[in-house]
Image 1 (cartoon, helix red, strand yellow):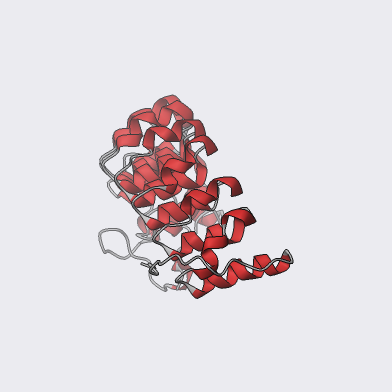
Image 2 (tube, helix red, strand yellow; image 1 turned 135 degrees about the vertical axis):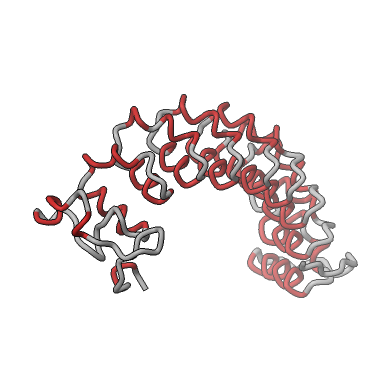
Length: 266
């Protein structure tokens, strides 16, 4: 259900909205506000947002309003010189609403914002070395956001991150020269992400990996002369892949090599 389907006009204090006492009655008569659709006094953010879309000139009067949704919506339309002060707002929604319109030099201090969602969004706006102080953020989701934006040649600085989700992002973007380090990671998902990006000649080093998915990646892409041992792999999908590749090449797969592995599929 959208806010347009809600047939009530209640303000943020729980009182009915009364157009008769509103200071913007002139806007109502000119069609620039509408009960249940565009109203600065309504408690629903979408209706407040629409009010400022229709009346951006009034936004400056509401940047210090008691209701945080009004402040957050006003920040989207108010003159930009009013926004730096809003970076100190107690509500994270207001801080981010202001930050998204401000130049880089103003938002750098929000790298240490107390709210994780603000820091995640700030990481999404920053580039290059501005992200370096956020590599050690206490929240893994922030570090993931950093790993998605940091230049590939700097990702080696995060290669030992404690969180496997962060290392997986790194494995998907890091330069080839450092990729083999992640192919030996303790987490199989990280190893698999790295294996998918390795050159075929480098995959032979993963032929004895404990995880069948990584051995399957080896069977799919490694040079043919390096995958013979996998023709007798513990996993049927790996064996089938090897045999299909040999068959397509018009060759018989070796049958005298057995590599005992157990399937690990967490």
